[in-house]
Image (cartoon, rainbow, N blue to C red; front, top):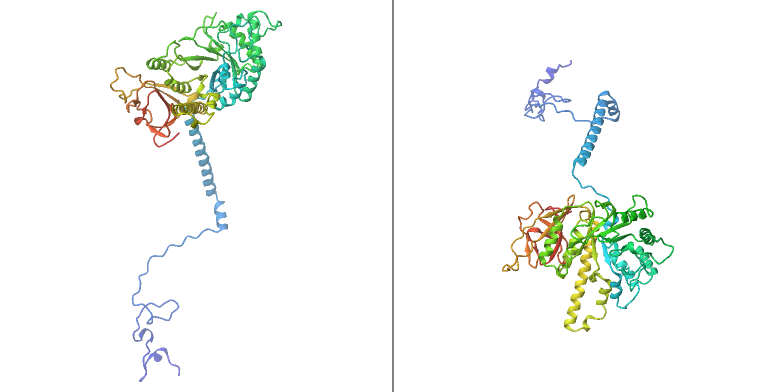
Length: 525
């Protein structure tokens, strides 16, 4: 007879109840039935955790097919169109803003410079070089040998002086050491090889009084035609221009117009490779002869003296006054060229060189034995040890002085050639206030003040300081508050200043000139 479930769960006498007897068994805890289980057992936890909120579904990347299907929808197409339009709009806006900033921002305008505005002129008398030659050479080879050396110093053009005999009746080369026309042609050829231009000095020559140029009877007889013939003749030999004085008869509107007509035969209408240099002999340029007004277009360069001509050596105060007058003079339309002019003490020689190289215009340096290669070579002949004490010291000092002179000249000329601030930058005269004198406080006479000016191009500034007097000067911190405080030495008359400096701690030595490149704190330009 089949038993029912209740009958099977009734214990019979003598049976032991199992531990896992189900819901009614011993030790069992009623609880929820586990999934897949048969009910609560001893393994069922006594504390049932309260079910928490459902966990968010994990992000699952879209498959390639899903992504392609979604990207091709109209919504994504509109988003992409908006992004492309926004990108190009932003790009065009940034470009327009950049162009506007460039247009409205103040900036220097670079004026194209002619060759004679970028070079350094060197006035040279060949007789001086040939006389200085140890071998006593009486030809022009002494000049030709120095041409590459002069070019290495930064000189770009030579003005040959004293090559014509002022008392002769023609324009032959009749100097005592030049002799023949073939030698001067050789000089012009060697100058071209050394990349040096040559100008002939016609100053104090009565060109209109010469009946012929070289004694050739086929030449024109009238004075005007003779001048044109002479100009054309030397241009054919490779001469780059001519120099005359403002006191010459040839300094006239009629003559200069004739020269301009000859120049055009050797170039185009706008060709300015040939120039006319006029030497100014007075404080102001003399007006053109037979002209109602000065026509500066007929003259390319006016060579002006910094110091007034005098028969005596100018004092330090006279030199300072002359320099200050030129520094405060207004700019003129015609391009200036600066030369020393008057006489100054040897102590101011290097200072005047720094001044000429840093003023707006073209520096014209007269023959200097300190940078003469022949003179420098003669100092190195023979051992220095074989000389007595005083002679050896004198020779050693002479070598050092010439070496420093060449180094200063080279530094200034090369700095001028590569720095736009020195070539075509603005010029600003700086009224100077110096502190009390550092050396001669009990001096009965006052020392000339320090002169200073600034050459600027964009954010590049060069400060030039000139101490003409015989006393030391320290800069006053309140002198120029608009200037940067720090700078870097570029050149000095003693070539003994290097590295950075603070303008507030700078002390100028007697007869010293300094060129400093100033810059803002924390930057270097």
